[in-house]
Image (cartoon, rainbow, N blue to C red; front, side):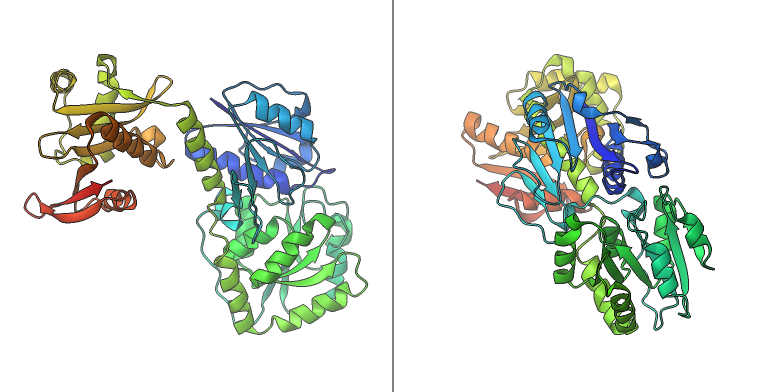
Length: 465
């Protein structure tokens, strides 16, 4: 399986798509998968893609394999290209904020605030907004009584030459100003004439630090709004391209931004000053912050990667009975530290003991043993013992596949298998009291806590299907 991320970015395209796709790349890396990152653009994207191996290429000429997961984020690719992806790959994911085209089979991701859809196979709303890794786990800024620092950030190229105009507008204000200078600014000399702190071509860590040390932002109304929302920075937004209109309207509905207008509005400067005056009220800024952080938790890219891998493995895995060839793979799972910690027998198992146990299990009519297999890997194992009236079930996952929601798929397969092959609708799960994660999981799967066992150290759960 190969994951391929396709997007466009640079002086002609802007940098928002590249930034959010970089976060999806980082999310797959968390699951030990390194995607191919292919950008139709130019080398001006270097500053954004530090520590990411990427290729500049016009990917519309690419061919794909049937084991590919392809993620595409484009404002320009034609419908025919999406149809090719849908027909030739294992899984297609389309990132789109504006419902640009009628997409073919695949998963559409629209992480914009308050986004809705009637499409069934879709990930919609700001819980799916992909933010760069530095924004996944970060603190929320304190709301000070006074505005002491203002951050000015108008995209990677300041398309409308707004930065010097806003600096001139604010030159007599008594707060400090931090100015983001993108990699493709053509107006740096003009900006440097002002006596303000300039941050040149910041990476995501530097961008986060700039946001964490400010009280208020003046920002273009694109992807940066979501990073500002994640950190809780009250923001005056300026529209710089027409396709930001839905983003602006929905952030206004959410109650986060104060919208000053579009770049070419005659009264833009006057509106910025009016919004600035309004936001000097610290209670209002706190309210804006609460509205922002309730909408964006920073985990969107992880959710996208998790959903993609879950879909792929479910589609391409096999649920089957164990075979003697599985012995060593089961041994590796059984001896994993997390699995041992959850087991009623925590000691490490030596290989010879495991082989004897495994051979006995293969020929034991009172034990069922199933695995979920992908390629040469065992994703997870499910065992059920008929020592009592009802089967006692247990599961464990290969650490490589944890965090993808596959435990649910494995257990559902097991429940259905037992119903169909043993005519059993009641199952038992015995879980250590200290294993809060397993307790929560089995309860979510419909198991009900019945009573304590093992001298009060564990709980018995029963499923009645």
